[in-house]
Length: 124
Image (spheres, rainbow, N blue to C red):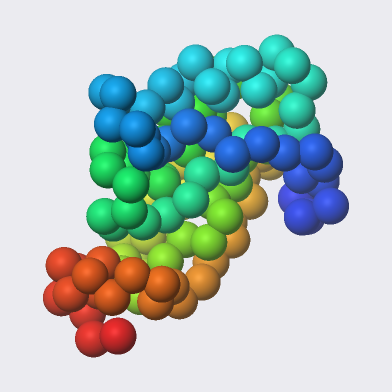
């Protein structure tokens, strides 16, 4: 089955970061609730150091994949320059394993926060 962006339907950002620093983001609870409320998709952003605590996008999607059954899951702009290509491909395949046909990958170059590039040791 080939998944397209149109299959994302009505989506919601999953709580993968904590701008108010009230503890660990309630990602699993949010993913389950999104599915329960009838959303078609759940999305996470990708940042290295934005609004801590911030969960890793692909790890967050794995957790959401394991606790949902039909929710399409997506990374809304995986920052590819901050990640190794081979590891990223393996991680995306791992996310898709418990959620066949339910993973969408948005990718971008980033650049909003120069400190993320510096922390990753990647020239902007």
